[in-house]
Length: 207
Image 1 (tube, one colour):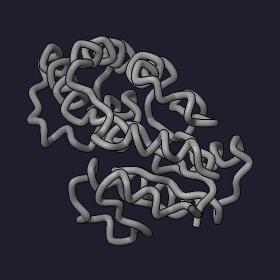
Image 2: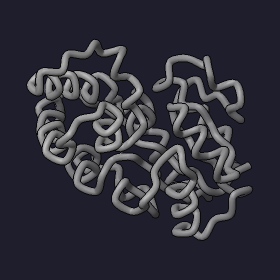
Image 3: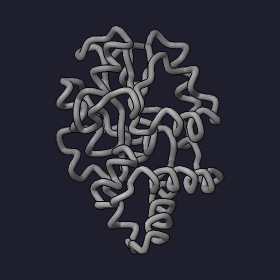
């Protein structure tokens, strides 16, 4: 099994889907751009600036700043997925090393992830500021492997989006779908593992 577990954050550790989409919808509406939530779902799993570029927003930097502020207004709606905090603590006492590869920026991690008190359980983190290319490109995951001192065969990436799976595949790393975030196995037929609930993560390690 695997000695290195690398996690995505949004939709894998934190239940942020509604927060990300509602705040984006609200910021775009202020710009005169009306979108249904379903039309914005593509934004889950990629950096915010890339989302705004795909939406052809001309002043993406400014809008991204406003979106970041808007997300913080929804912090009361963000939680660690049920049962996952306990599993992370269990894993910290096992012969396994954990890392993070996320599309959040350094500041977004500081504002939105650090308050949950889980950061110290992860030995190495790659965020959107750390690589020029982002998921689904393999660079973030390869950078994390290098930082952890891990090779591809000894690591697995746990995520919830198509971008996560494509990133893992292109990096030559196994992929485990966090079904509690993805909510569907459709389009994830090539995933190496399907994790139905957080405790299933324990099946990925040597006990």
